[in-house]
Image (cartoon, rainbow, N blue to C red; front, top):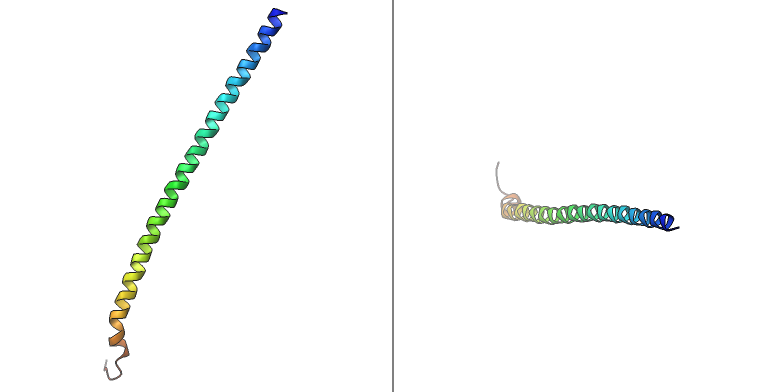
Length: 76
């Protein structure tokens, strides 16, 4: 009976270690996904600021040209 309980205990330990390994792998995988999403979010925010700046510059350039474009007696 002692041999059987020892085998059962060994099996329980093996399953516990396997489950522990699986959970560690899953946590590392989820952490990697979270980091990739965070980097993507940061890149998206940075690109949004760059786009906003380019649009702002474009509108400022357009506003500077409006007086030229609206002159009625300008000959081309």
